[in-house]
Amino acid sequence: QALGTKNHLIGKFFFSDDPQYQANFSFVGQNPYQVPGYGGFIEFHNRVLSISDTHVFNANLLNQAHFGYSRIYGPSHPEEPFSNANFGITNPLAGFPGLSNVQVLGMFSIGPTGLADQWSKTQTYEWSDMVSWTHGRHFLRFGGEMQKYLVDFNFNIYSRGQINFNTFSQFLAGTPYVTLLGNGVPDRNMRATDFAFFVQEDYRVTDSLTLNFGMRAGRTGGISETQGRLVN
Image (cartoon, rainbow, N blue to C red; front, side, top):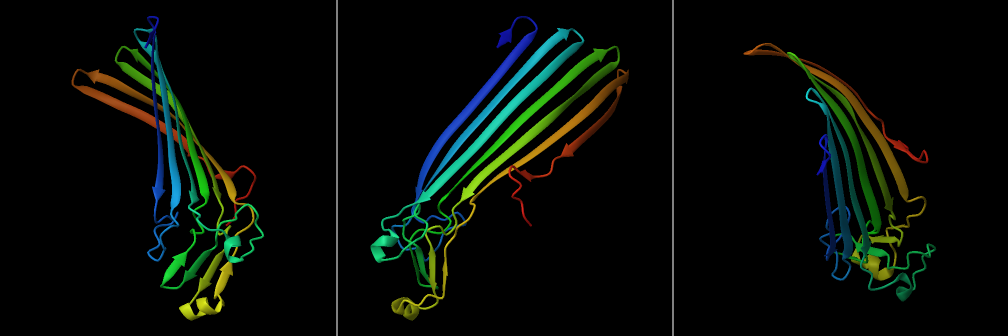
C-alpha cells in the first residue's frame, strides 16, 4: 500500500485453529498399553503478523522498518469417562476429579495420562530497522534488530493421581508398588531478549571491482522467569 509518494507499507497476517482428538494421547508420546477410552483433546492456535514500511527520503537515502509477531497457543485436556469417586478413590485436589492413571507394568494402563492436562503459549516479537545511503561510489547500510521471546506454560502433572502395580497379582490384591500425586506451582513464565546492530559498506573501486566491509555486534539475552522461579 502506497502512502503518498515516499512511503510503501506492506502488511501480512496469518492464522489457523486446529482442534484435534487423539485416541492415544500423551504429551511425551503414545503409551502402547493404554486401554481405549482415555484419549485427549489438544488444540493448536497460530497467529503471525508482519508489517514493513519503506520510506524514501530522497534518491540516495531510504529507511526500511519492520515489525513481526507470532504466537503459538496449545492447550490440551484428557478424555475422562470416569472419576476417582466412581471407584472410591479420594483425591485431595478438588479441581481434578478425573480417574487416576492405574498401570500394571507391561500389561495395561487405565485412566488419563498424568501429562495430558496442560497449556503452553509461545510468543515472539521482532523489531528491525535499516537505513541505506548511496553516495558516489559508496553504498552504506546500517541498522539494528531486537527479538523478545515469551514462553508461558502450565503443567498439571499427576494431578489426578498415579497408581502403579508391578504385577497383575498386586493389582488384584490392591497393593500398589508406588503412588504419585502432583501438587505445587504448575506454571512458569520464561522471558528472553536478543538484539544486534550492524554496519556494512560496498565501495565500488572500479566497474569490475567492489570491496565490501561490515561489522555486526549483538547480544543473546539470558533466560529469566517473571517471578524468579528458575532452578537448577
